Image (tube, rainbow, N blue to C red):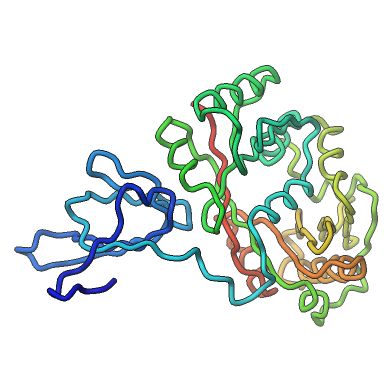
Length: 333
């Protein structure tokens, strides 16, 4: 924030700046009780009837009364991350989509409608990156009808927190009554340091095949979808590898999945037997998969982690990953 020559803070944003990234300061208490200010940085998603809405990089909405605004300016897109590869959102979201493919898809302009019999929101939601080619209301009605024909709830996936993400769309969906049910983060890292870690990978078995033991450890098949649908989603992708650390009881002690797609290696489904945690098995699985991906020519890594999964977040932070953006699943009312 800057002061003008009169010593007053300067508001340099208008309703014409909707859709741009802004920095604001507002008064949060009456001057009689002492001036107190709070700041908000994010995308200006609306400015109507004297109220500004700003969507932060975490996807949270900040409401600001225009009368309380004491400073504001347009600022550049979020700076490049200090760690990890250069990553363009448009490229990364398409890579992530190819790593978790639906059984059926259809195009609506740039949007991709995806269905997989209900197995995971990712494979049963609209990837709303780009322009649907229709007015927003009409596009959303097409989405509802497409999923209703398949007896599935209508979900739409949109992102926040990076240049080119859909903060305005997220705000519009919430205004239309679409409910945000889940939020996850996409993290990125350089691949070589992960592959070079001093981890014991001698017990990790890599395979192109998805076996029953791997699926038992994975365990996330109860939310919808047939066994055939689960296998098809997990088995599809440009170059798919499954990792297992043998264990007792008919299921591996640890598992993981990696999809190599050009320069990117995507890691999913890293699971460890609760009784074998804190033994380095998760790191070993990640390292073995990274070595395989590096041998195939990849140089960058990505993964998705739910915001509430503290254990996984600690593991990935220790492996050098940083947050790139967040994506949210909105369910139609």
